Length: 465
Image 1 (cartoon, rainbow, N blue to C red):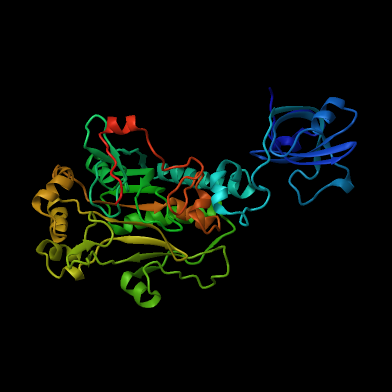
Image 2 (image 1 turned 90 degrees about the vertical axis):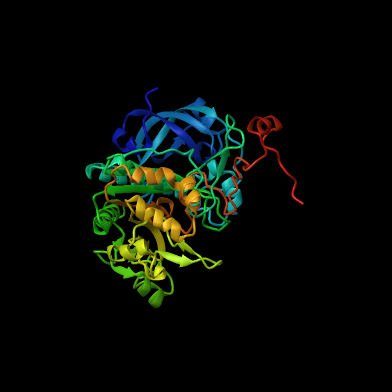
C-alpha cells in the first residue's frame, strides 16, 4: 500500500492517492455523501458520487470514528466552494474506493470540542478516545517537541543522556516512597525513585561531568488536584561548576525553547530577574512569586529565579530538617557555620528555584561534595551514626573517592509544558494521567493481586480495624 499523509495532499492535485485514518464527520446529502477524514497530520473533505457505486455504498454505511482506507482523486474545489478558514479547504478527495478497516462503537462523548464541558473522570476513563480531540493531540505533540528540543540543546552543550535505575533503595528524602516487594528476598523491598538525586551525583563521582535524563519520578504524596503519583523531570547535573554556571545554561535553554517553539509568547524580562527568598516572602507572601505586570495576557511568560533559601527549618518536634533536600551545599560564606553547627537557622543554601507565572517549574543547588559536609547535615537533622550509615553510607563512601564540586537542577516537565500550552492542569499534557487521588480509571488501578502473587512475595494483608 502506497499511503499518502493528508498533510501532503495539496501537492497531489490531479492524481490518485490512498489515505488511511478515521472518519471525522459524515454528511449524507443523498446522491452526494461528504466525509471528512483525519489522520495524525490533518483533515481532508471527501465526496462520494453515485458514479462510483461501490465507494458510494460504503460511504453510506460508515460512521464517525470508523477506521478506513480511502482511495480517490485529489481535485481542486471550485472558487465558490473553497473553505478559506479550513485546513485543506481548497481541495477535495473524490472517493473511488472506501475500505472499512475497523468499525467503532458510538464514542462516550463528542471529541470535536476542547472537552472542557465533559466530566474529567469520564475523559480519563476513555483517555484513548479523549486524546483524539485536537486539544489532546496538540498538547502531547507539543510535549514531544519540547523534550526533543531539550535533548538536542543539551547534546550540543556536551551533556550525556544516562538512564538511572527505577528499582532502588528507600531512603528518607522527603515524600513517601512507593515500595516494591522482592520475591527473591522476601521481607525486603525496593523503592521507586522520588528523583534520580543520588544517582546523578554518583555519575559526577564517576567522571561524566555533564549528565541529563528525561526521568520518571514517583512520590506517594497526599492527594491534590494537580499532583500525579508519577511525573517527569528534566534532570541534569554538572561538575566543576558554581551556582551561576548551572543557572546560566538553564536560562539559555528556556529562552531558546520559547523563542523556537512558542514564538507567539513573550518573555517579560531577560535576563530573568533574581529574587531572594526573603524578598519573595516579604513582597509576595510566597517563594514562587508571579511577577507578571499583565496577568490577563496568557502569552506573557514572567520567569524569575528565587535564591538564598534557608538551609534548615524547624520540625514540629523542635528539631531541624532540610527545606529542599539534604544534599545541597550551603553558600560558601556559610560553610563554616554548617561544619561548626552554629546559627543553624541562619545558614543559607545554594538552592535556586526557577519560577514561571507563579509556579515553581524547577529547582536545584550546588551539592556538598565532601563526605564530612554531607554527614554534618544529617547530624544536624538528628540522625544517629547508625542511621547515617544505613541510609547514606554508600553516598559518603562515594564522596570520599575523589568527587568534583558539582551541582544541578530538575525541572517539572509536566508543569512547564502545561503552562506553555496555556492549560491549567498537568493532566492535560500527560498521555495517560491519573486522577488527583492517584487512580487510573482507564486500567482500574490500583487493584487487587492474587493470593498466589502475595504468597510468592511473602505478603499478608491485615484487615483495618
